Length: 80
Figure (cartoon, one colour):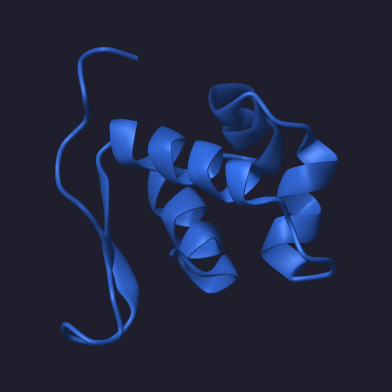
């Protein structure tokens, strides 16, 4: 599962605002804000929607077990 730090980093990598990510993931901007601040336990469906939206934009999530937790830009999916 992706972390709040990875979501913030991925959004910064893409130059997206919280509103843009919310629009692409079809969730509320308040949900993105809470998720990124780890303020409350977000629904798994929210995490999944956000992760899919970022992956469609070309972000790859790197797990801590691989090479240290992070994100990188791989490619943008042409089906946006």
